[in-house]
Amino acid sequence: MPSKELIAAVQTNLPLIALFLGVFIAILFAITTRLAYIARQRAVSLDQINLDLTREIAEREQAEESKHNLERALLQGQKLQAIGTLAGGIAHDFNNILYAIIGYVEMAQEDVSNDGLIYKNLSKVLEGAHRGQDLISRILTFSRRQVYEFKPIDLKETIEGVLSLIKPAIPASITLSFTAGIDNYIILGDQTQLYQVLMNIINNSVDAMDGEGEISITLSKALRGNPFFTQNPIAQDKDYYKFEIKDLGCGMDDETLERIFEPFFTTKDVGKGTGLGLATAHAIIKEHHGDIAVVSKLREGATFVIYLPTYKNIS
Ligand SMILES: Nc1ncnc2c1ncn2[C@@H]1O[C@H](COP(=O)(O)OP(=O)(O)OP(=O)(O)O)[C@@H](O)[C@H]1O
Ligand SMILES: [Mg+2]
Image (cartoon, rainbow, N blue to C red; front, side, top):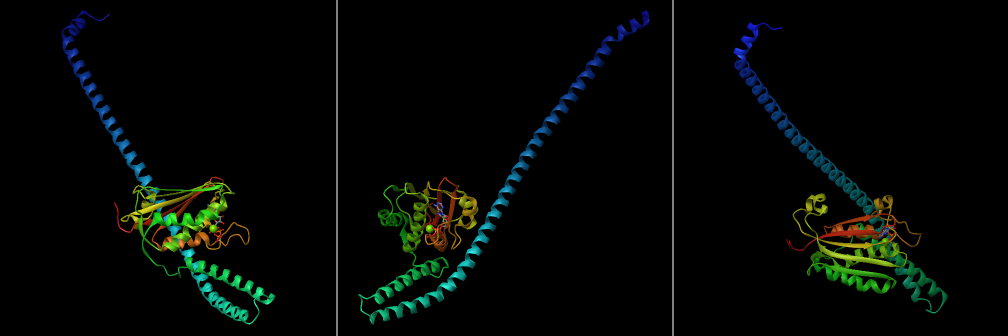
């Protein structure tokens, strides 16, 4: 039992004790609030640092991927160039040989009657030699030994021209559609060469489609946000037209996709494909300072995307 004196002393100092306790609790509360505030601030700045770090990592990953893509494109370009130079050199010599063969066969034909067997056989030799010349002309195209005639041309008219040529030659069960966004698509180009690009790609689509389906071609202005501009630093201050040729044919697996622009790469039966179609298309587009890419999955069709610089900047 506390003594009366103690109780009296406590009672007299009660207000003082309460005051001290109050002040103590207030200080404790202030400190706790401050600590909570600091902790919250830290959490916010940690979140910010975290965000910055995540962004930086994503940027680095993207830069790394762009670098990887550029390196691959460079390697692929060098490989194509090496094969092109080699094939171009051989083709040149071969052309001279064929010229001699054609010349002598024609002379020999003049000496025999044109309804005899010898004349017929010589005609077959000529036919073969001309096919050889055709092949050589394609090799010379992708090995960049072909002379280009660049002038301002309308890409829309060029595509329409190819379609009118190719339509009668493809089965009626395959439809070809073409849509273009704006009116003028002027580029500096060689129309004959571009005809060849389109023909080669459309022929491949026809081959991939097993007799029926749709090939759709679209032409538009390439939008700035397009990954093409980020992946091609030299493209950034130019405007481009973009055309796509899409089919829903057999498509390609990744291994085929990797190699399609290689000269002589073909998955077609002997005698059905030379493997020069896309190598030629690639070389022609590069000669026009453009780019060609393809997106495809096995059994899901293929889309070829071509970028060509506009004659004058349009944006
Ligand atoms: N649209 C497509 N769909 C599926 N595969 C395709 C398509 N386009 C091309 N390919 C594949 O790419 C390969 C190479 O095509 P490329 O046009 O260079 O040669 P090719 O068609 O085989 O022969 P060539 O065109 O010289 O007669 C083809 O053999 C085929 O495997
Ligand atoms: Mg082809």
